[in-house]
Structure formats: C-alpha cells, structure tokens
Image (tube, rainbow, N blue to C red):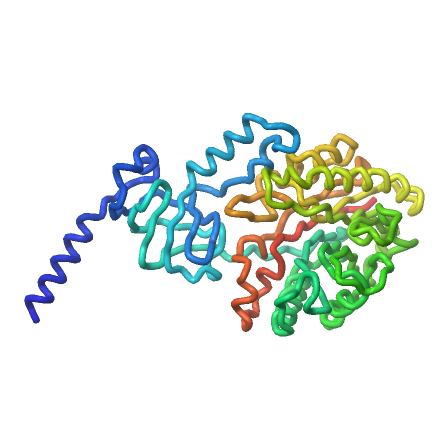
Length: 423
C-alpha cells in the first residue's frame, strides 16, 4: 500500500514538473514546439465566448470587424481583414468541463493548465476557474431628466408553438416575463421602445399585467390583429409621458413584414410639456454569409423607408426633435448606419460609448442596438450607455435555470439607456 502511494505521489510530482509555464506570446511564436504538451498559460485572459464544451479566450475582448472597419457589403477593406486575422490569432479555445451557463463572457481567467492539441486549441479534463464582477446597478435619472430605453426583448410571445416559440414551455415563458419585469423595474425608465414583441395585443397585455404590479404603464403599437410575427411596441409610464396622434409606419402596406417593425410615435413629457418623436426600428436580420452581405440590400431598403417616413412624422406630430432607437442588425461601420449618419442623424453610440457593446456573437462584441438623433434632439441628450444584463450570458442561461430569480438574460441583446433633458 505504501509503495502504491509512493508511486502515485512520484507520478503526480513528475506530471506537475512536466508542466511548463508559458505566456500566450510564447505559444503564438511556435505552436508546434508545444504540441501535445501540458502547459500552464500565465497570460491573464478574458472569456470571449462560452459554449457547451469549450471557452474562447483572448487577452481582451475582441470586436466584430464591421464594428471598427468598413465591411464587405461596401467592398473589401484592408482593415476588415486585418481585424479578422488579429481576432483569430489572438484568441484560443479550451475544451473543458465548465458549467457553461454559469460562465459569462467578460469573465477573467488568471491562469490555467491544459494540453496543447493543435494551434490555438487546448483540452483539459477539469474546469477553468473564472472570475467576474457584478453587473453595475443603474442609477436613477437625475431630477428633471427623462429616461428612454431601447431594448430587443427576444421573441416575447404570448402565443406558444408558433414562429419564435416552437419549443418554449409555459414555464420558460413565465421565466422570461419574470426576468424582463425585474430588469425593467431596475432601469427606472419612463419610456421603453421594444423590438421582438408579438404583433397584436396579447403580448403587451401579458407583460403589462405583471409590470403594472409595480407601476402605471400603458402601450402603443401599430394597430394590427394578433398574428404569429414579431413587431415593435412602446411601453410608457402614464404618470410621466403620454403619446399623441396615431403611430406612423414606415411601410404603407399593413401586410408588409415591416409594417409593425418600423414606426414612429410622438410623445409629450407631462412634467415639462416638451414634445419629441421616437422612431422605433427593427431592420432585417443578418443571415449566414460574409458579414451579413447577403441581407444588406434589404436593410438598405429598410433604411430608405425610414428616411422617407421621418419628414412625414415631423408633419404629423408637429415637432422636429427626432430620436431613433431599436435593433438595426448593423454594426457601426455598416452601410445602413453610415447612411443615417450622412442623412444628418448623429450616432449617439459613437458619441457617448464607442468602446462598449450591446451584442456578443461567436465571441465578438459590437453594437446592433442603436441610438440616433437629429441636431435639435442631440442637444437634449445627456448620456447614452448599454446595460450589460443579457449579452454576456450563455444563450441557454434562462432555459437551464428555471428557478433563477435574477434579471439576467431575459434577452440576447443589452438595452440602450438614454437620458434626456428636454427643453
């Protein structure tokens, strides 16, 4: 028995001594040198992606190339390919036994020991220890300020079994509602602009049935019957703002897929009497392909329809202050975003928080959720920021944690918080 213990101890000592401490730079210099070798990676790393059986790590968060460079829809750019190559070169993948839904992107990894299986790939039979900081609490808006929030709420449907919720159970639906209401209360907002809510009355009323346990809210949506399709919707605090006149769609045909996804509404601040227009837009989603190139044409059509609608909105609502919110399905350097900027709508994301993000896709961060304003509205914006309550969590976080009482991961997008000082 003592001999066996001695041999096991000796084997463990030799195994540990065989582990070489290396930096990521040393590995990158010559991966072949360390092939099939146990190493301890000493470079501090951050989790960029959390998947079922692996983690994607890098020295810092990596951006989607089209967040920082002209994308393929506008012609190949050298910067685009440089960022693409850099993202790949600086990221590594470790196959491990972490409970994937507990790991957040943005978590820190101080060191780990694993076997190098190929260039950029490691494997370990254990978990990788990660460290994260709590999500910042949002301070309430300052006295006299009005808070508006743009948020994609990820297929919020009352009717199950259809377009978005073929496999959603009533328990998961209740969980999403509970998380969403908790998050909305924590945002201290006077007006919410939602994307991906079921068209019609059922979904807004299902949400308000829970939300009005904590306040006094009503909603505005394009008047359409309940259908198995996603649309957009405003939810507002009746004590602070009121809508006036009817909503105006960017599409004349009510059978259009975008009739309830792209529209404007005039609002009045009851405290100051000031009025402003909010355009709420959900552009065509990306599809698999190079940088979303294959659906860029449809997003440009959406953008043109939006720009055609806005002068009509000024006439209808009798006010020139325009705020644009929503999920534009475009990163900052993509053609639809730059078209809006050239048309005179300042990108408030670039102005206030350019180095942040609202979405994580395949380990890359960027903004799909936007905020624009025309010159008269821009001067009344005091701050814009994303709130990281969703995008950093694994996509099955909510589904896997039925008893989870947190507000995290009610959606796959982070909300955009906009504070106004109307005058």
